[in-house]
Length: 251
Image (cartoon, rainbow, N blue to C red; front, side, top):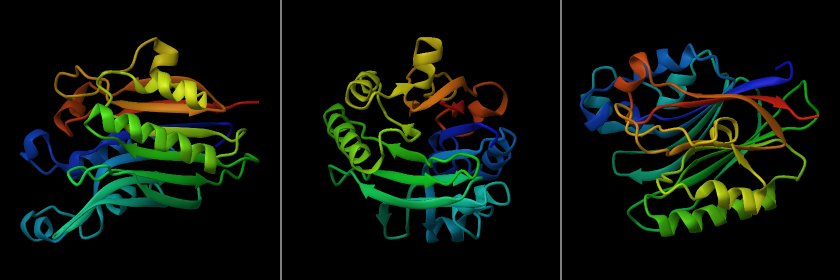
């Protein structure tokens, strides 16, 4: 890891294009492979779906997160959030570095939205301290997001020692852009794009991004680069654009 690492956060829309017109998981896999991220945080990733597996020609025989991880990311964790008759989907973390432990907490507040916090602890052999990664997907409703951000803050205070590197990445659905101030006040966390570029990155909808929904927050790290992939094939994949950040370990 030589003191630096790269993280990608991406809502993959269950492997479909906008409007569920076409299944393009293979193209998503090819696209994220060339980014060379050390850690990938995924939202709306399918663990299993027996109906689509039988009807869609290119549906993988494994889970979507195993298919995407392949030989690039040897370690992965999956948090099952939405469970239905034909299968389930949720958040996933893919990592080049060993996952020491992981847990998934249900933060659903209504029967209509199944949401979770996937907390993975990565063991970095070149650093004394582990890296805590939270992969999140928050509610569409402002009132519920406020409660979920409070739940997230409480989990972090309970589970993450003050001096250890911490990243919270995912789809915050925070179209009113309130989350950054909340997380800064409650946890001292910064958002990568806001910190380096002075504004949240626009990531949704992918074809003409107008809302800044996808974020990477951090603490006890130095952010040295941040970007959103919007050129080329990216706007033809999921309904979200992926965001990426490069970090150095703080002294």
